[in-house]
Length: 219
Image 1: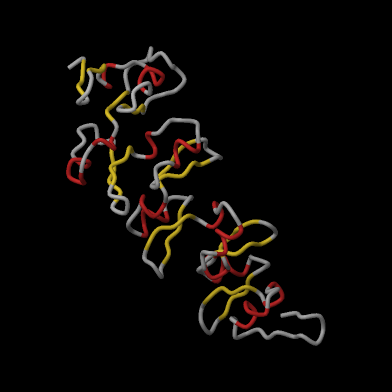
Image 2 (image 1 turned 180 degrees about the vertical axis):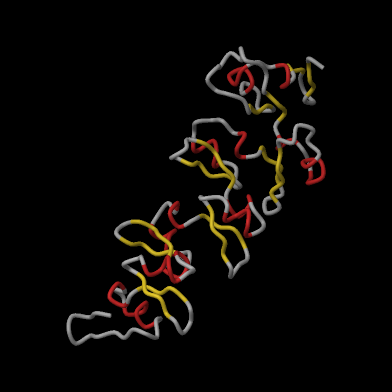
């Protein structure tokens, strides 16, 4: 149908709107096509907002397969990757999404994107947390120092967030070539070299190291 009824007035149906400008004039519609053509010369890509679908079943039955259900907020939202808005704020109004500045695109947060280790690890933006058995944002993509250190697998080194040695290397060969790490034959684990632990707490966590407060507090 060319028209739709929202309970109070008649409006032009979303699927009949050309270009993102006309599409987003209605708060009942959302755009998923290219934004290089505001007038919609290349065709229609305007659809009824996923948020108007009530309940998980109705959300998952979207005929265009554009919607995803958020079991935490109990909302149906457009899949993050279909949000072509150049605005980070527009992207992150959806709690399932984050804006990737490097790529200039909206993407699904790792915890909601993958449910198993193999798929999670295949995505360079994500890594698998064995403690929680969940997919999380890779250390390299942490947005702040506090966000970095909040993940037990990550640490800040020279102003950058990186994986700690045990999670950066799982084999002797890869560990031995990292100047900041050393291989422990007893535990078959890659650990940070003692001299690179600048805080006593982290120094004491490695049974191979000890804190020396006699000569300038060193590990």
